[in-house]
Length: 128
Image 1 (cartoon, one colour):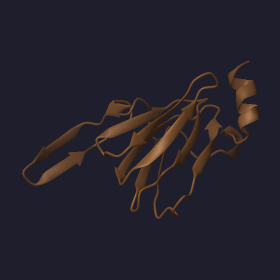
Image 2: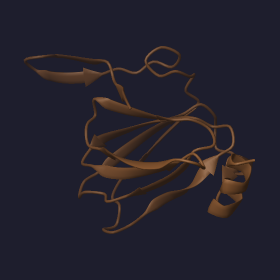
Image 3: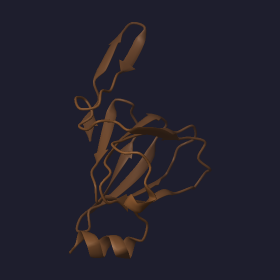
Image 4: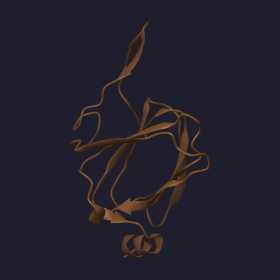
């Protein structure tokens, strides 16, 4: 997890992210998750090459990350924090609080061939 560059004054705060500087890659795609149904779970995949910068701009959620040998969870609940998810990291997202908005910056456009959607297949590749 990394501190996003926060600027602010008596009017409030602002985070401006720039590809290649505050985000460690050029940004090719931006999307966000919102209006999540209670008790929903998202993710459950890894990317072969894509990397992401994930920010919970409102609310909170838990992200579980697995590199094939180590598994751990982080709670995202601040627009000031960015989570860098590198290639070949399995992710599971759950425990969304009401009103959560999860912003994702990616270094490539959508490519279904980059996804690994089966955890057993992911473990075979990651542990090879």
